[in-house]
Length: 397
Image 1 (cartoon, helix red, strand yellow):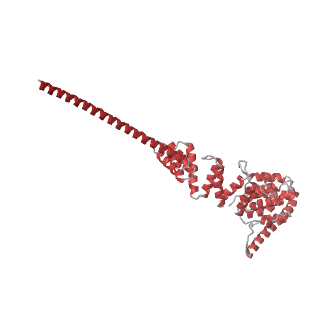
Image 2 (spheres, rainbow, N blue to C red):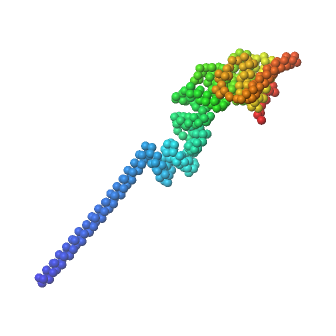
Image 3 (cartoon, rainbow, N blue to C red):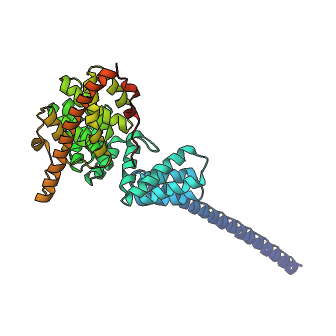
């Protein structure tokens, strides 16, 4: 009995110990599993924290202008968030990065309903062409920066790009800078620089540049006012058929006596015949202050000039010299000419012959017209110049 009891007791104790051991083992396993899960959660949190810190670091670098980070974030965002991608591509493009510019253009194709983005894409297309050396695109890009078309207005950057084009002798950019230097919107105007830009354009034989240089001399912009010098440049452009210069030349001569009105009438007549409506109207007003004989003579004098201008057969300074001779003017051609031409004796004599021929034709036309006018007055009481067949615009062939 005692042995049986001892055996049963030992067995019960063994079972109890086994149960305790199993319970302890189970608790240990649960603790280990819990710790494992806690470590996994902590690891995931650490990874998430590291990723977040890395992302914040990338964003911080990108916001500070790191181009590599900007393009990386733009490419990542392009797969999930087009607006965010557009933001980063825009930052890259503002650093003159072509990849960023292409990114904006590409996204604009995917977001066709966004009208603002379409305008921005037009600007960046111009910027891409400008980066490839297209001078017209560079000029248009600079203009857009000045006026805020498709991009935020930026005078400083626009000026830098415009000046870059102008320094490569792109005439529209040079003319723009000449105007910009005296524009009201310019925070740092420079009349002297305006005149210098127009002088550079005039050296390139551009008629608009010649006219604007003349206007600067007439108005004393960046230089001392000089009527003769201003008229020289206006007439240099006008004798080459530049109609706005003809009109301006007519305007400036109006208040200089009878001779001045005669010269004004001729230039306005030429401009009106080529199609300048304002010149035609002003010409009729000038005619009211001239005698009928004088007007008829001036029209006859203008005919050979008009024919030569339309046929591009007016030699350098030909009309200026003709007016100097006819009206005893003192415009010093040698003093004002920036590019005296070196020609051989044959070419020089040919030019002189053209000038003498033109002046002679002008003088003869003036005399003949005056003589014809005396005869016409005996049979015709008055002349209505508004109905003259000469008012019909001349169409260039």
